[in-house]
Amino acid sequence: MEIPPPYEWGWKSSRDHFADDATYTDNPPDGPWFPLFEPPRANWFDVYFNSEGEPEDMGSTNYYGAGWYRYEYWWNMWFYNNPFVPNPKHIWLDFNIDPVGPYPYAEFAINWSTDLWYYEGEPGRPPLPGDDETLYIGREIFPVGPGPNTIDFWIPDYNPEWVSIDFVATDVVINGWIWHECVQTSMDLAFVITGEEIPDTVRNHYKTWLFEYQPFEEIVFVQDQFMEDDLQLVSLEFLSNPVKKVVENDTFDIIRPDDHLTWYRAFGRDTLIEVEYVNQFESTTVVIDYVEWLLVPTQKEGHAPPENLDHYKAYNIQNPMEFPVQLSLEDQFDVMYGSPEFIEVLWPRYFLTPCIKNMEHPQLFDSVTHYVAYEMIPTRYFPLPVATWDQFGSHVLSVLESMWLLVPSKKRVVPPCDPPTIGCPADESQNQNGVYTTTTQWTADDGNPGNPAVNLTSVAVDLAMLPPGISAANVNF
Image (tube, rainbow, N blue to C red; front, side, top):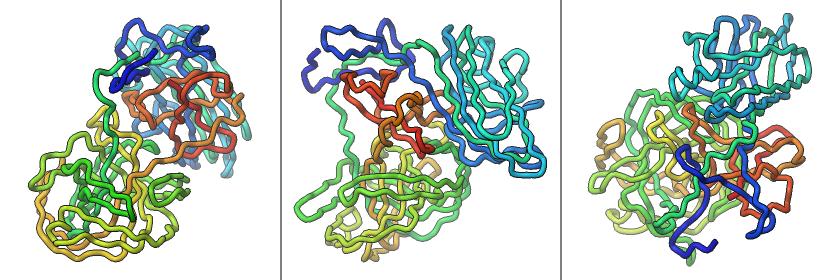
């Protein structure tokens, strides 16, 4: 099928479509054509149960809400699956139980939300403590022991919207994978031909200025590709302006002059993730550990409010390495100063991921663009007052000096599945309403990433670190 420019076509994530289905073939256009089914979802869990039987999470991924919930007997962690449908459900797990104390003990069960929860429960969440467990939770108990454990289980009558792992344990560390598949279920996709030009996804560079410290107190719920977290915001300290960047013969103009960002110092969960990224300056792998800033879309005096601008979490980069450059920067303050600022050294300080705050939007505006914040040497001292407005209120900022350059960057994908026989589940960053964030808005999966004969364009899912032998599947459309 030929679609003339500027139109686009493809399979778009959807829960509201009619009489369409994603298919693939290795013999286009004659076929035969085969349906694309929902691939298995995968979730990593890692938890320490202390001598009191209380869980301390050590890096589980893509779970609902607060993570571990205490029910009448069990400790439970929920994972979103797929919408309720009358198709069988296949669940399988591989995990280790490692004794770490004098009285190691563990019981295990698989939970799921029942069909009655689909009809009577509260949308957007699993049944929680206080809901009727006998009506809304199905449970199957399995014998487990120290060392490796493998569980294989089917729910024959329907695919529940939520599945969970349940433990009663003391003095053990438990970690492993749960896979859950809605068998032979068509992907939640709608065929779309747009009547608009291909959207411009080019983003600004930003020059970031330090201003006089302003105390601030707020707790916000933030979701990005790595985790869900409650961030404690304690101060407001930086402002990012769109900036024109010139490197030798390459000029990067300001694309969206009304986009500004204010930086709030944040405290949240620590992490330890290896990230590979590429931008104009470097292609490298770094380790990020803790979040230090939340960047909030901001309107600056004399400008319209920003449109379709994401929030960003700034993670600290361990052991950054400086490098020499020759570039000039000119933002709105430099125009007032009377000349561009010339930079000689850059030092990568933070890796920025797009995120959603307090579930204010169903999805990211741009899940592809990340930023690396580089400390600049030398800096420019240029004190001036600036009025801004963001979601937390109005501020008069006393700007002091330039500090960081934000460079649009692309996070590299994980390697192909190896070996493909493990199932290669296409994991995604999810929120409690079942909204998924990937590196692309057009998603599908042929269910067989190990088959090179499938003739489809391939885009890999961005995913946080995985243990050896596990990797993300390719996403195809």
